[in-house]
Length: 114
Length: 110
Image (cartoon, rainbow over all chains, first blue to last red):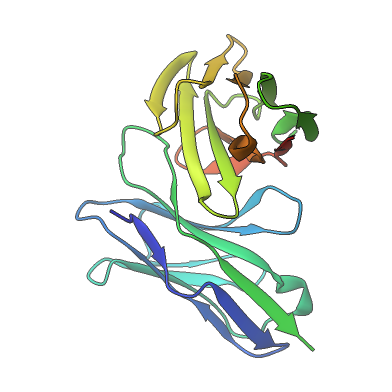
């Protein structure tokens, strides 16, 4: 069964427009949630994390995500994108508190156009 | 603080050969995980090592193996390479739930 579902594989967006990347996970227990970004020919960079506490988490470059336990979602948003935000974005979860195994979504490619 | 270092960055191997990839985690991190990334299958978990012990294993054949040394450095080995093993192999270093990734090793099997 799919643990993490990213509903959009490709999201084209114009510069300075808002963007939302959707992520749903399948779990009835408390989890840790993450968003990673990958630029071409590079590894994954941690963008955001939800471990506990406030359900709204923010990154230093303007992204935010909200943990919604009832809807089992962790959607990523940015109110105004830049060309440099063009990348692939992965939602990931840790389902077991006893280890650090990440289950990833299929990824969403964001292409920002001028 | 140095990040996660993976070597080599690129490898080209022939079918049937074996390969060893190396990962040096962030200083102080005791957990190292390995992932395979391909266009068709996405990011798949291979295994996790914590304090030299394999703590978790993904659904890969026995040709894929790994180990962790006392200084937390880790290696993964793939024997009898197949064309389908061509992928980006990513190492992740963890001191807690957050994982920090290296740049990856791009393996091409010809």
